[in-house]
Length: 84
Image (cartoon, rainbow, N blue to C red):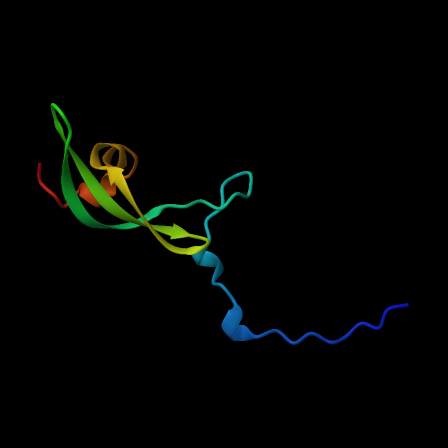
């Protein structure tokens, strides 16, 4: 027979539930938080615009470079203030 011990919770280690987003299958949903930088990438015959995106990741802050046109399609609210 085991001897259960009393566990005291540390309130400083709690994560607010309103910051966590899950989908219908209870998977963590990563969404962009802000766009930090914007650069032009020159290819052989064209130029593309890339943006540095900060994501809300379960592992902490995460940054990636993404194509601006793809981010603009999925998350247009980040570009509503910028005039084309």
